[in-house]
Image (cartoon, rainbow, N blue to C red; front, side, top):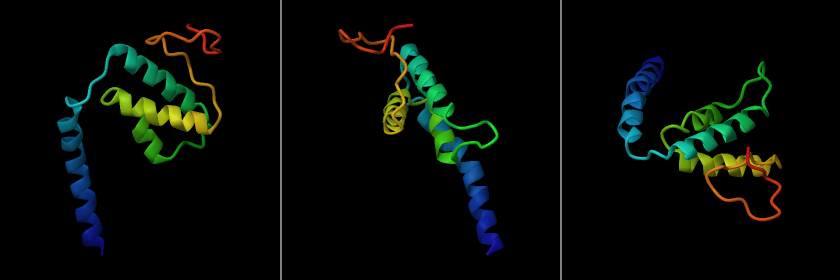
Amino acid sequence: MRIGKFCLMTGLAFGLPFAAAAQHNVATGTPSDIKYCNALAKSYSSMFPVNEGMPVADVILLSRCDSDPQATIAALERKLKDEKIELPPDNGIAQPPGSTRSAQ
């Protein structure tokens, strides 16, 4: 049992960086997408106290803003809406008339 866990952990430790490097060039976003993604990540991470931390899956999601901002933006917007937290303004798109989201 210990050998199986050791092999699994070793495989993940060496395999995940290579998989991430292989996908790094596949999906890159514009600087405004990355900036908006980071703003969403900051809003989402503010829900968790510093001494409590957040789930590992969420930490991984937040770390994907530089490599896959569009998918990360969609996931973070969904999580923030589920928690009924107002989304930060997206300066990359025009705001509709009467919108409560103001440009910074």
